[in-house]
Structures are given as structure tokens and as C-alpha cells.
Length: 171
Image 1: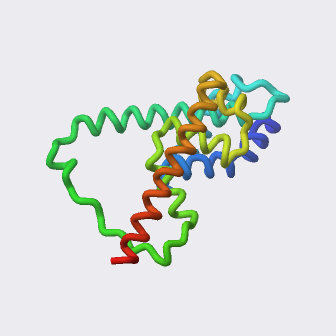
Image 2: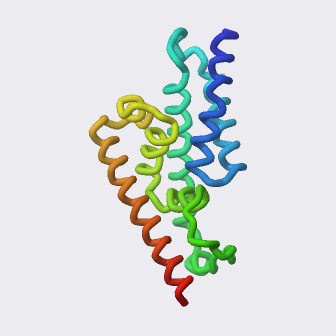
């Protein structure tokens, strides 16, 4: 039992990285990781000894994330139109037109959740298409399509942001 716990603990940095990239909110990401770990430890018997806990943990986390997205969608459907029209907070001006990690992370939030999850598992966590498809519970071909379309979406968002930055600099 101790070996299982240690193996799970070793996966925490990857789980945190994935959660933060999915949610872009450190507190919400930490909550997601904690929920995932609570579920994992409460269902430790479902994990087979000798097999890496990585897929199992990422599957648990993905399912919790999807459940959260569905719950937020249901709650947002209940909000009034007036609340939806509240203006966004003021953001700091962009400097020098340099693409940095913040630009990529912001652009990644513009990509749909299904495509974003596929991109993160393959591109950031380094999972194979088969592993990522298994985590997400979808066929490998579907995952490949989501990764390709997600990359295209990301390129378009980043290109639009770059063009907008250039126009601001010219004005």
C-alpha cells in the first residue's frame, strides 16, 4: 500500500501542471488536484500494482475537470443577461509585441476545453496519442483530430493577438 501512495505522490507535479494549464487559476487548479488525489486515495484498490498510476490519475483528473465544466455551464445558464454584460476588468498593456508564456497560456484558454485537454496531454505532458486518448476516453483518431484542430485554433488566436498588437503599435 505504501508503494502505491509513493507512486501517486510522484505524479503530483504533472497533475498540478496539467490542472493549472487547464484552469489558469492556481487556487482552482490546486482544488482540482486535491479532489483528484482524494478520489485516487479513496479508490486505491481500483489501481493495479505494477502499472504506472499516471494514466489512472490523469483520467480521474480529466473526469473531474469535465464534471466541473458541465456544472459551471449549468450555473452560467442560470445567470441573468445583466450579469453577463458586466465589462471585463482592465488589463495591463502589452509590451514590445513579444510572444511569451503568458500569451500562449491566454491563447490556450480561447481553445475549446476538449481540444485544450488534448493539446495539454500530448504537448505538455508528453503522452503518446494512445495514452492521451485512453485518459480522455476517446478513440485515438478523435484525439489526433482534436490535437490538430487545437493547434490550428491556437495558431489563429496567437496570430490575431499579434496582429492586434502591431495595429496598436502603429496607432
